[in-house]
Image (cartoon, rainbow, N blue to C red):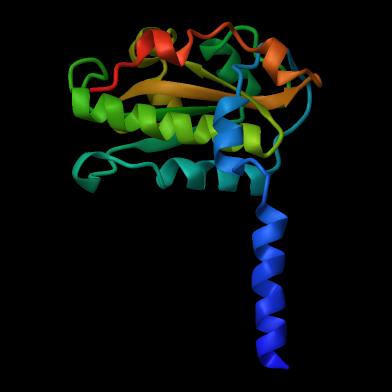
Length: 184
């Protein structure tokens, strides 16, 4: 009886996955940088999962140089991203250095940002990656954000509720893979 159940279970698993798109690939291929955020909170349990995705990002020599600052204070968030909507959260990713010249830390923080960005969308939120506000943030708001003295903000991810949209039509046009790929 156990053998029959085991065989049934194996066939069930194999056939239930047959023809289904891999969920990780689906999340990557169907993502888009949200623009139409609406009011609404991001739950603490979802934020914890989103941050955990950032923590699990790969990094050079496994150094994990990042620090995540979750900005829920709307007045402070509005100083960083002027069109913030009530309930949006900014996740500022910082690392030691000036935020401009240490390529390894910049790349590591970018990988963490991508994980956070995709995790938020997987949980049903909109997300958007920003690098533009970093200079002003580092000049004027490091103390308000509680960043360590030796750290600078490298990138931030905005997370929040969005209007229901078709992700494919909302995404910016992308180049064809064949136009940017060479196989040798």
